[in-house]
Image 1 (cartoon, helix red, strand yellow):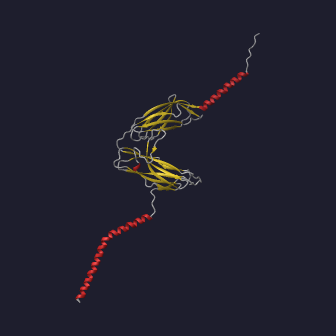
Image 2: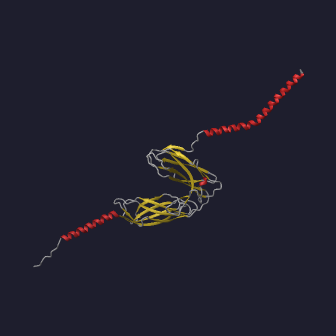
Image 3: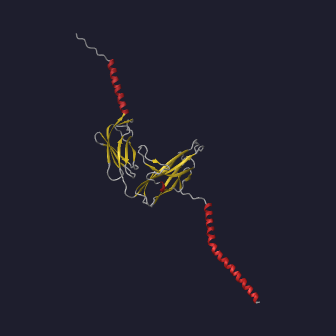
Length: 356
């Protein structure tokens, strides 16, 4: 009887020992196995779930096929402190007649000493005031249906060691029309055509900067004579302003142009809206003026603020407005009058009266 009891006790102890070991092993391995399973399940669900778009779509006012796309705004100015960031919306409107995939990338740009080129996109090269590494685009390729506008958030983040001054970059949007593709109008392309539109980013980092610029010239494209073809109203007059930025930060020169006639009376005041000039570059600006009827000598007075401080630079330009159609009519009239007088004179003869 004692032997049987001892056997049963040994079996109980063995069962308890096995159960205790199993529990210990479970506690040791459970934290490792369970999280791995949970991660695998989450990864599987994330892979199987559809990707959420990083941009918002909104319909355009109309569904007209303009055979183009529109990117806006064309210029974005930001002031960001070192280590800070700002996010702005870039809009892309698809008016190409069919659904398109647009590619978005960032590039640096710089100014130019060629007056006909305001900026130069640098592609993969880095500019002297590079911003491309600080521009963050949520998706480099987006699908926009025809007649829709996408709002893409663009974030500019500056490093903590960013130096005071200006940083310049661009977000370039492109679309490729491949060979053989057609639009809704039935027009097909024979060769791949890449269309690119860029939005310029001007970022100013607070701190001391070197601002310096001046007006280089104030002229008319055709010289001192403006030949107008209209009899009742003078044709538009174009004034050219050439500005030089000698500093290390971009400037926004602006000002006014006033025009007086030969009697000193003011016949026109033109507002010259701000235009940007990149550091160490020339910037050409054409100002269009639509006057009333002009005839004779005039003086244009330009007062341009370089984009900093309160001082202005001035320049005067003397020009003549000649409505050539009126002169042509006057000339033809004089020819007719003189010809008529000569004709009448040739038909009339004066016979002297003989004295008796």
